[in-house]
Length: 237
Image (cartoon, one colour):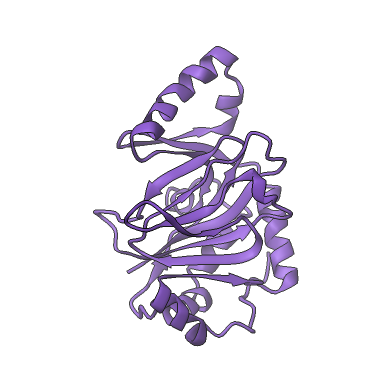
């Protein structure tokens, strides 16, 4: 088990001033170095991945092994509706492991990544986030691990959900040595569709923003030489 803790140099009350004024914030060196390295190894070595995608308003997960088995023609047939969906509206296509769902359904018991779910629902993490966001009623967090490979993306949306009380979205970027030319940036938009700010994949870096907020994850280039790795979730009431 990893003794996970936030870098004590970070003052959530002070940092929260920027978050509440601007609506989003990036915090580098979020964890102490040894914790960050351990969490990186945990996600980099993870073998439990599902291909996550939507077809319209229906959402799917397929074990990554199933996609690998497809021949070129079958893979193209799989991709066609995803690419068509991206032309017209909200679409996503990447790999994830939804720890919250796995734990609630009793799946993969004892999986190493489940300790990250436990941490983001701990008093330490939630207390930091309550102070950071100014939302004292945050009481839980979803938890995912995500992996974007070549061709993966997440189109423009604002993270609102009709049946959930989401306060903020967080991503703990755990990507080393990312070349900016590889894409995969988290970008934020104004009402005219202009990109007003972007965060490139980085290591041991928290990106957090208040909901709703228009954003996307840009397409990962076909020549990207490494995966874009992160822990993420929504802070909820």
